[in-house]
Length: 245
Image (cartoon, rainbow, N blue to C red; front, side, top):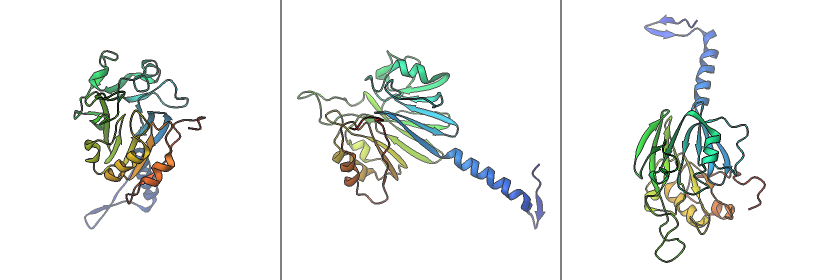
């Protein structure tokens, strides 16, 4: 039982209670932290407040020891983003899936967000952001990722703002992002962008922490050196275990 002592109109806790109160505050603070688990390529797991948030679960990743997903975010239509077999393996009966409308024919039970759409799931604010190629494509007049098909995501939880880029180049919409705590920025040619361009975008956004991901074949040291904006910490996670690339 927690007993308070009244002193001059204020409630004062006995000294013996302070360790327990400190423990409670510490436990609460730890619960609000975000743990980042790199999986493979575009796939990662975020752990927050006892919840597991999966991004683009893919069969090529190792999910051993990870909890089942409370929330799954799908960014695009390709196999490395939309893997129905792996989605089935990590989901629970009450798992919420958020995805762009382009995947509706494959996973009809998802909540669909167009670019600019918003929702709230499990206390997490979710905004779907454009993820697309500006110039790069398989041939003249075509791009690998057309605007409006895929989603990046902005997550807001416990006052933190987390940006997941999806497959994209450095778009005008990305450059407008502000107050980002953690950013996951893609890079790999020819499909998205080179490390130098990704770093340029990070220098515009200025997140507190940035993780390069979806980076197969890219030189992360080039990226890290090119991130010159003050106050940005580059963290390198291992998205390709056993792969020297």
